[in-house]
Amino acid sequence: MNFKSVVKYSIRFFFLLSIVYISTIYFFDKFVYLNSEQKFELYLKLVEDRNRFYEFIPLSWITVDGLFFILIFIFLIILFTTKFYTYVNELDFVYNNKYFDEYLMLYLMWNSFLLSCLYIFRFNGLSRLNLILFTFLIPLILFLFRNSEIFSNLLGRPISKENFITFNLDELSNFKNLKILAYRKLKSALFISENELTSFVINEVDKLNKIINLNLIVIRLNNTNKLAQKLENYLINLNKKVLLISDKSISFNKNFIYRMKQVDSKFLYYFNNDIQYGSKYILKRTFDIIVSLILIVLLLPLLIVISAFITLTDGKPFLVHQNRVGLHGNQFKMFKFRTMYINSHEKRETLKNLNVKGGPLFKIENDPRLIKRLVFLRKYSLDELPQLFNVIKGEMSLVGPRPLFDEDTSKFDKSYMRRLNVLPGLTGLLQINERNTSNFELWHKYDIEYIDNWSLYLDIKILFKTLKVLRNKDIIGK
Image 1 (tube, helix red, strand yellow):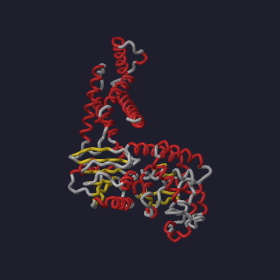
Image 2 (cartoon, rainbow, N blue to C red):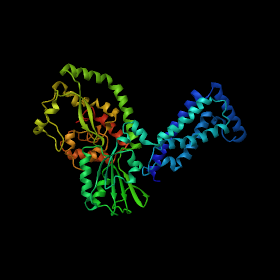
Image 3 (spheres, one colour):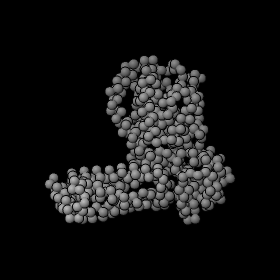
Image 4 (cartoon, rainbow, N blue to C red):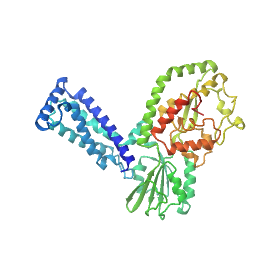
């Protein structure tokens, strides 16, 4: 296991340890102990055991809460050494919902350990009803942390709404019962000879990527033991999940991380370059929700004042919503404070000859659609503040490429489409470097740099730089 994996599992371990420990102490203190004196009586039993069996431990270290911490720590160490808990294989076959089986296994493991420890350390006289309820709580926490798709569902990215397409996979194929396929929606099943596979896959994925939320590509191979280098590079850089099902062992041109499993003499190759998926997505969404809620509370008086000022200046509505393209091509309504005359976006086509931007970007100097008294809202990016609610809804992030209009996205080529593989944001690398550039190539450069280097640390760094330059530049928005 490399250093990065060690850090990843350590963070996951200690975070779970904290959650389980805090939940245990709270539940016992509130519900399991029959009275306040009972915990002290249990402490005296621990002191008695210490004096009899392990006097080398300082008396000051002996506490009931401390014992729970040690027991939970030991249990999680044992649990994390098992493949059952740490390894979730998306290439397993699923013929029914195994969630109950997983929960039951965790329930039995936890409670055999817990009840044995309570007996050994003479924990008696507890509230039996509440103790029974507690036996269901910790396995539930462990279960939720094992299945990241459940948290993703709660945070706005349900696996059941993810889509996949297949190439040369028979409709009756048993491989459609793989876990990675069973919970997702099939959007298109395409067939082509393997000699034409490279250009066909690239063209079809690019075409579908612009009109549907595409998350997974499945390719069935019969007579190929090596992908064309162009197709291999394309799939690796696609920032989506890719599954190859082959009759032969595949030799790849490049070294990259993938998972291989052999099933019924077939070779399954799976690689996931979706950088905002699973635990990474959960981490980013949790951060976005917490920070956005804090900002909404702090800025609520300002939001009310701006709403009233727009209404007094040009009437209602003070808020507009525009169709924008988000993660994996999902369209959503992006909120903004209105700074233009009503229905100004409909005049965009007639004014495109005044556009000073390049590529699919659109911006007019001294835009006649702007309401002069409201220009300051755009100058200081105050018109973008309602997008904090888009962040709460899971349609945007605090940091990421700016969401563009659907007509802009239709002009993207396959390299530009990568910017749709992360949540769009209020601010990003471009906005803190060259906000007013008219060169879309530069937009694309910063977007790809963000995608290739994304981390929560980078998000925090960009946010702090945003705050640093906010006084001098209108850096957010488009």
